[in-house]
Image (tube, rainbow, N blue to C red; front, side, top):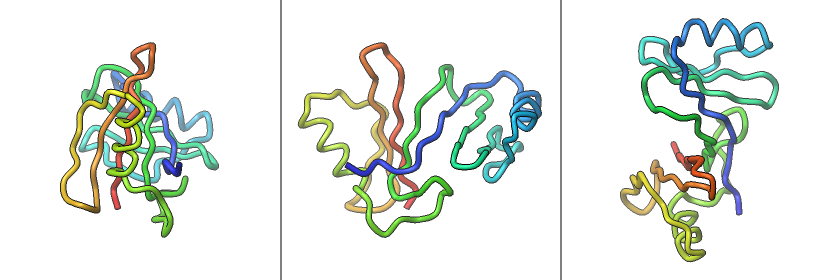
Length: 123
């Protein structure tokens, strides 16, 4: 199963303060926009997203169709196929946004401890 780029999406209280902190750890902004209350930062192959006011808890995020640099992949498991696989295994999915037969879409699952795992396809 190919679930794509991995990142941790952090719910932050003050985007500028958090961004400055992670910059000290060697992370650089490579996507997002502070005016939209989020940035995606990178240190090597490690990605973190900082999101102010968008959600309450931290989220593990996978982006099918992207490598760790957010470059499109030619070979990946589409979000709809992943969704069907997980449901067939008895997993409950939430926050489903799956339109059409291809292209962008998303859904989340909760692990046994209630941690959200977001699958968010952009291609």
